[in-house]
Amino acid sequence: MTVARRAPSVVLPLAALVVAVGVWWALTVALAIPPFLLPSPAAVVARLAGNPDLYLTNAVATLRKVLVGGAAGITAGFTLALVVWAVPVLERAVYPYLVALRVLPKIAVAPIFLIYFGVGFDTAVVFVALIVFFPIVVGTAAGLDRTPDSHLDLLRSVDAGAVQTFLAVRLPHALPDVFAGVKQSVTLAVVGAVVAEWILANDGLGSLILAASENVQVDVMLAALTVLLAIGLCLYGGVALCYRRVAWQ
Amino acid sequence: MIHVENLSVTYGDLRALDDVSVDIDDGEFVTVVGPSGCGKTTLLRTIGGLETPTTGSVSVDGDPPAVAQSDARLGFVFQDHTLLPWKTAVENVTFLRRMAGKDPDPDGARDLLATTGLGGFEDTRPAELSGGMKQRVAIARAIHLGADVLLMDEPFGELDEITRDEMGVEILRLWRENRKTVVFVTHSVPEAVFLGDRCLVVSGASAGGAGRVVGEFDIDLPRPRDESVFGSEAFGKQVTRVRSALHDDA
Image 1 (cartoon, helix red, strand yellow):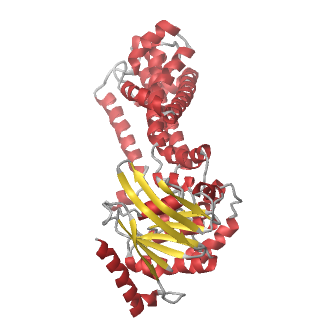
Image 2: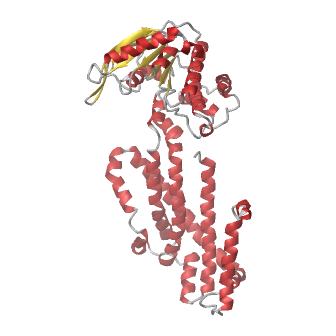
Image 3: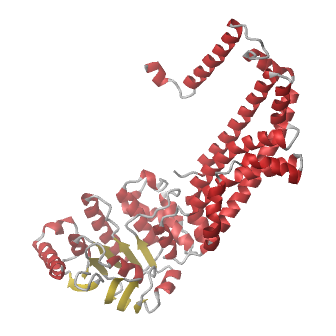
């Protein structure tokens, strides 16, 4: 017990990972599972190491969609939330739909995009942007209403302007909610990019997984999944790190 | 000089203040005491330009409150400390000056924090300060703004009684050193008597809920005052007089 309590927070999760991979490895050996059903961890690593260029090229392709689409969706969502928040008539007219549309499975829209925009990088980016959009709108809109009235009174008492009040008080008060939206969006952006690569584009890790599936190359699929996991974790970690720099909570 | 003449404030069907007239001299410390919901906060906020008179008028040195606001002549201290949680103590003190378009003067802010007992906490954020310390920062912020008039809305309402008494002594010292006009709203009769040159009793009971000034008392306790005042006979008598004005009305 005491050892477990004193251990740094990474040690136990790391130990669990080692055990899990060990069990996986032991099972493939002990039960003599054929590699085309479940390859051993070593086989997956061998795939990655054997053809690093393949995974790197596809990872870059996927990452580009995530970053470009994510940035576009976040910018659009933040801007729309600002406009809707600043114009009360618009807020009352549009906001209910923005909330309702969150429920729509955006993935189901991909085939429509295929008809309108065809296959390619741009279509994939628009699709990622669409998926990222909603959490940002809702997070930003909620955050902008978070400023306590007393803080607004304080600024009114020295006759501060609307823009000044927004930048000095409203925006900082909104940041925790905005970042909660960004964190959600980053995860969704990777999902969006993979789905886009199945339906709307022919490159990237999503396409690689799909092609490997058709050839029953489970080791290639697992190798690609490992890279996707790494991408997702890095992005999420990056946002969390950013948040810590600006956070006040 | 603050001049309030026949002031009534109505929110929809709700009459908050009814025909209030008060004059407050420069450098005077006026306390406004009354039960919750009697309109005393509305009076303070209307003097500070945060509420608009329905009828009657308010002027600060001859100007409407809006003009006094834009000249940074009004320093508010609210019950909620209203410190920005992402800013340090000294940044919070300079914040209002920046918002008012004045030179933030961080050195002056540090000196002021040191004299209010917050030396060593200048670069600390509000989350790590006690309730009393946060309210000290908020008071320092209002003084640092350079306002002639301090408008204080139950600033010690959320503090424990011991801290509250200490803060009372502290605010009197700051008032003595900075020579501000102070309007101080509270629901504590002893606090109102301890602090004020003059104590206005506001109550809504006789006018169907709308606040009226039902009593006005000159507090002739000698200054400077400190904690020893609380035990004196003169203090007790004043408190009794103010209390009876409140209860006569109810």
